Image (cartoon, rainbow, N blue to C red):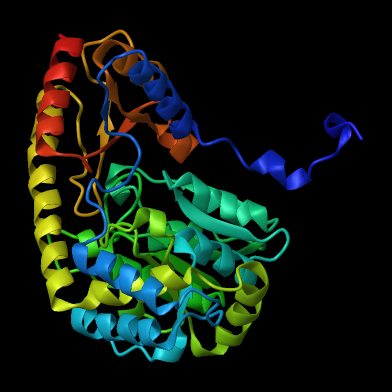
Length: 393
């Protein structure tokens, strides 16, 4: 059979390519040609897994604990995660509500599989991480993107939830702090949002994968505001384990069996080696390393925001978490001001710096904003700012 004549599922029409990866491909071509390129595009920490985690993985492989685990994850790791909520957030979460997943992406897929019905509408802010709306589309739901600007901290508000909740709306999908903006939802606003969703018998999925990287105030988990929320977290960002593909969910008691059934069928389990290695993340030695790395991200944030402002790339909301800056490109002195796609192409090819246009994150800010990742060294950040200065001059 000719593969060109095999019909693909209609849902693919609602799933768009990830434009960030196209820029990464172009950057790789430039590097193969001998250009030096500074990567400030993909959101991946430049730090890798801490030494205690590496040692724990080696020990696990020597012990031979490489076979399937239970679909919910190994008991010791679920218990450690529950304990982490107590020390980090002051919340008592029973271990039975913790579900270990194949990364935060696996967690979001599970959440959408369990909660999103065919034709269900899910509210989320525009801009948002693009895969979130595509997870909804993968289960034949519809992501309704609500324009959210600087006045809303690029986040949904309770007022927007009330105004946009319709007959097909079933819930909200939030991220705090957010990719691409690095902004969090203020606790009182989040409390109001969750109350409005609960009043409408809807679901709330809150992506908290960047909460460990909160700089200006202690992080507040949605779990401390509403016991019925589904939260997503990950070992990728704060714990610097991107390629290990390990995350977790905390779900209401009543939903555990539903999540377990779907996890058994979709994933069987998360990586056994990664699970045993991740136990070391919560050791005092590892936590000391992560605190030092968080302080370094904080230092980078405080350096890059004023540097971008000095270039005319305005930052209307100072990011308080993650490792992103969402910068308005409409006011720079350049022919491509206000055309983020053409601007990032020119910056890549002329200055050798990878930045990301707002295109991937939703139509509302697509042309006007750039996402800049500071998950790279201070030396690279300083060099990138010099290159941008010369490019814009």
